[in-house]
Image (cartoon, rainbow, N blue to C red; front, side, top):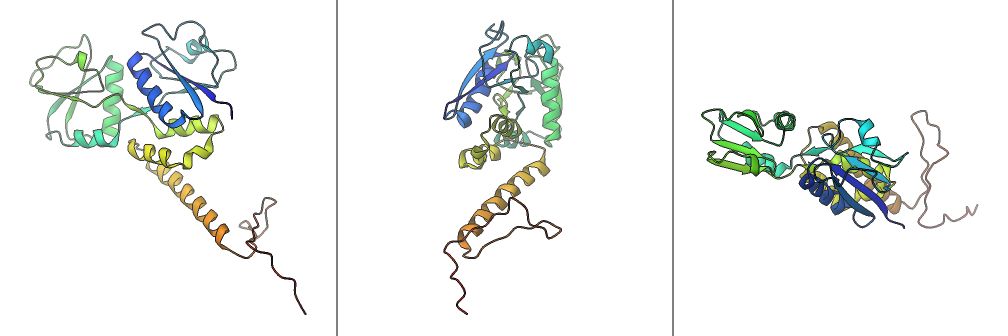
Length: 255
């Protein structure tokens, strides 16, 4: 099978490389992954053809601007990022009631990350967005940053780097669906990745996990039964796509 081509676009080159590693880790065997950044200029001009472009929301000012950099009729989607569960567990251990800086490249990025942390239940501390040019408030001794330690004030006593946020499970599922690679979603590699990424979409995760589990159980059932199986809907009508399977032929009646 010919490899697909996936291009990742982000504002910061380090973020682009991080997202690229995530995608490469899951799709590297079936797709070539390229990364581009606005800050280093690699995302400027018309980008090479790819089967799918995934761009972070801060890379360009609008979808129209993104469209000026990708070949016409290209598939595009947004990069969606989240924290890993192991990093959230670290933040859960912060002293309750502490005033904590969240340090990022821009105010918008810092506030978006804080909103996501609070969505995940990290609300026992008082988050303060901090970014280049912001005034350092008094009585703050802890700072958390997603791999932006260069912007953390030197006088802060406790510095916690949670690393670049990872691509979400939903983003990986969307890539697989858009490229016709749904079969990869059932592999152990994908399942392990999905379990490591934090998500507030509990119902979706449960539904997806349940559908995979039921499908596996169905396959086991079909492999085990020796009798034919006819599928019917809620109106007791068989479907044109009814699945039938026999492990061995049924002998003809001998009356």
